[in-house]
Length: 432
Figure 1 (tube, rainbow, N blue to C red):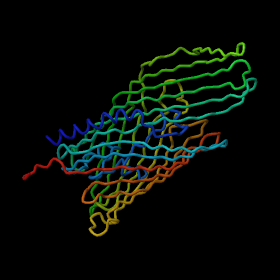
Figure 2: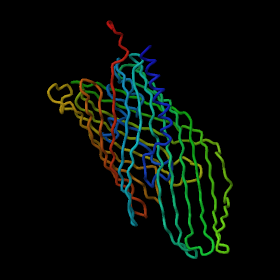
Figure 3: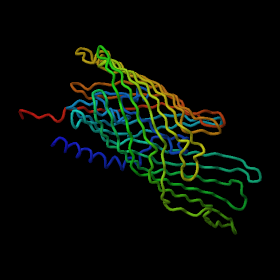
Figure 4: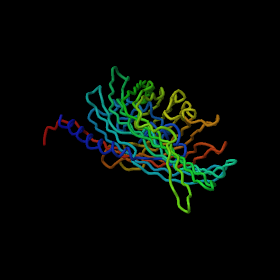
């Protein structure tokens, strides 16, 4: 009980500052984050980020897998794991007009996992859901009006704190659920400048804010089929059935006019649309489900494959913008190989080598042009000396979008670092 109390004290100390930090945490500069709920973050972290993100069927007794709550029972009966991760991203954005580079680096998540009984385990943590972060200027020329400058900029993030529980109702079957608390705010701004107006200088401005909060459940299951020679196959499924959250939406449209009178400037401001202050309502998220399969040879090889889908075409966002949403489909495959996990003489042989790839039809579509994302990933799991703890390092190279139809092509490189701290807890000591 003393150990368990320490767990919750540690969780409380970590969750409170992390919840505050999550509101200012931003991990994108992509112009595509202007649409929908921004850049949706991957459901996989840590070890499997180097495996294309394929993780729904993964069961590892020394690594945390938050993508499927059924995996929590894989932890050893005396084991306690705590993991946190950071990531950095370099991206080049280009179209037929020009290009720009951007760098982002931020804290991403933390999680912990331990058993309650021999057939029940729990996990809790904080993970990102989506990020908004862009600053775009577009020049245009309109007949009878002249040159126009449009500025678009926004920021914000949605985060998800979770408490998970998993049980083994029968041998080789595990089912689990996460109680998630979604929270965060997204702010989007747009300004229009009429550059060639001779007597009056107009600035049209729109400021939107969307806050989301609320609870939902995500469910998962894993079934393991034992094979000969310490081999096994695991089948998995996850689902979220259209969760509904409370949302607060505000929208302010104004026109700012500067008039030259007798060599002096007078400023007038006019509200184009009535200001809606934190209009409360409900926002239904999409039906989400996924399937995975994993082949494992104990302490040597793991191969994972995932299919993941979210039905964003049925989602209606406040303030418009739902016309660019479509269903998301993701395919991922990855592998991990350890030459000799228990080697005494060679540290290199104890390293886990990982690689994978992903292909994603994102939830954005412009004029029948789908925004697709393809990436390859690779990395290593570095064992800590005389410990079951691991330092996971991975890199991902990818391409999203296209230059067709005056859209933006994004070439990116991501670097992920996570530290998994493993300890033996809940041991009744005979000698002190």
